[in-house]
Length: 466
Image 1 (cartoon, rainbow, N blue to C red):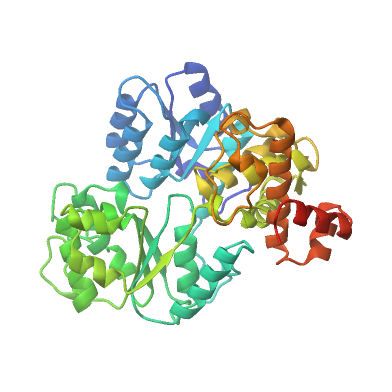
Image 2 (image 1 turned 30 degrees about the horizontal axis):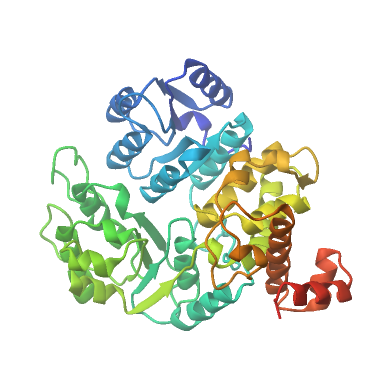
């Protein structure tokens, strides 16, 4: 593990699992690396530990007797929003893992896992907790474009960002969990005149209303039990910059009213305070909920919605932009190879074929996690089928989308398609994705696929991809 400027003994790690061997394994591994480790055998015991002391990182199993990992996550975020939580989950509970990410989990890891996988995730968290570089110093974060992909949907998204970036107006980003809405928010910030000012993010779903109010506006000493010092809120920290409110649809209506005032008047008071503070902040919000439905049910203020939704940006799910997958794979493999010190730069052809047809319910976040696991397990320079979770091979195929090519198998009854038809569908989707990646340049596409140009033209005609 890379040496940090801050001694590792100053970081507190909590391991929560009902299996003693897992607790012992993780505790020993991270104590050997210098972290202060506490263990808990169930969710209730973990919450007791959280109430007694703050933790920088928590690794918790999802399924446990009594309080589960989601309960541990909620308690951790209510106690200290800066705590980073890694949820360990069986692959079959992917939907719950995505829900954990929505509630503020830093990451999830699928069973069975290798110790190196968790070590890599913890190391990333520790690196992010380094003291910030002073003003005018070297930036630690890559300032190049973070959104990767050559599909028409992604290119339209980037075009929209370039248009609205320079504006001062609020932006509402919509789309399913795991699609990269925070990356879009960062791109908007970088395209604005505030790009050299703070970008402050807050996951609103992870916090109870009282905690969220304090996080947003800050509080005065003595404002409530436990408020032993004055606290500066996110609006103050984001002054002259951008405040990103993730999962804004989960905010309690009482907090929505106070946020509306900030958007309208650019002023607020800290919790327990009387002094009115002025702020110059651009608000970018994101949600995976249908806010119009929430308005109809009385769960979201209509006036607040229109204040947020000056500009609207939608991020499609990954299965609707499969042409991005080869670019995303290349991007993640390069980064993971650098992080792990390994040289894993490509996927075996069957793996890429699987990736191109898999529905990706967890979207780009799931793709990144699958690749992270694969790089840790890979023994050579290419990811093989042995490095991929076997459950991925048995997922039902995603319904046809406008961005996916149609093949003969589409009209076959479920479960009736022959092996040849399924192979044709895989090949068709792979060729379609490559054509999108190279913007329909057939020479480059054929070279990438290892085909003669005439063979590629034949297959384009065969699968109706003209």
